[in-house]
Image (cartoon, rainbow, N blue to C red):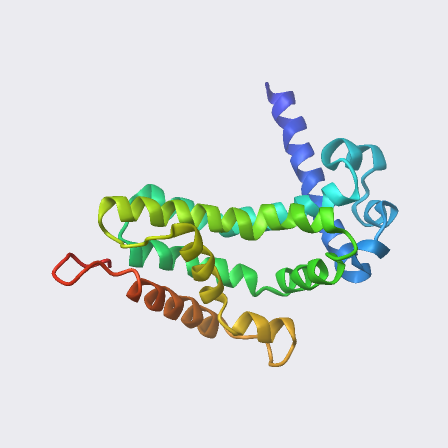
Length: 214
């Protein structure tokens, strides 16, 4: 068992090293310009390992995005499991979601997907399903459940979820993508997320006389 655990630990560290190296390569050279040899040179891995774990270059890039998106969705999963009121649950999701979205690496990967998406539509589709679509589905499920419990009033959870995700970003994310202003502070990012939650919940409030959403 100890040997198996050691092998598993080494495998996880190797995978993490490959993903870290690949992220840097993709950001530096773009998807089209990046090669597996570049990734191998930085990570010390092998082509066989990359093929075994990720399939190909598209699979490697999709894994990077998938890992990033998984980190963004963890706070929402925790909030749902705790069964907290919508104000607390959505805030506890929105703040770390926005912080992750606004990191230099996330912004660079976002720019890369937009730049390369028209040339690699299959890749763009995989990224969309792992990122925005997965996030919207999770949020929609939460809104649907809270409506059933009587704590929210959301007639179209799928539409509302996508609107909410865009509200979290506000124009702060767009300005960062365009490099129009210096990198936003954590305080600015948090305020953007918290304001979005309150504004969104104002539109999902139950009729007058019902209990509070927060």
